[in-house]
Image (cartoon, rainbow, N blue to C red; front, side, top):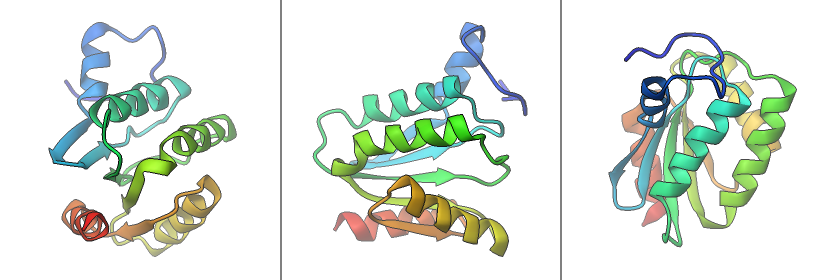
Length: 140
């Protein structure tokens, strides 16, 4: 199922919820990918972070790549919830690698946002592969 460029809410169909949850997956031990939706909402943010927490349950340290290519800037309410969700994970986060492509403006915004959100270890990357390697280095 294709995720549309619209905000999803609690009224999402069961197949939409499963498609959203499938955007977070385990790559290998302690390493995950979080493929952000084009239009974030409180619902999708909680759904995807719940999935990440479910996959990382029992791990003392882990890292993840978040693919932000094609994402629209979230509103203030979503940014605040993102900070809350990251605060819950931060003690166990070895690294977060944001994939922003080659856009230098988005790269700069991602770095500022990462600082504001409170990531302790962060890189911005051109590709998912680069992000995975940054996470692997941090997990060593």
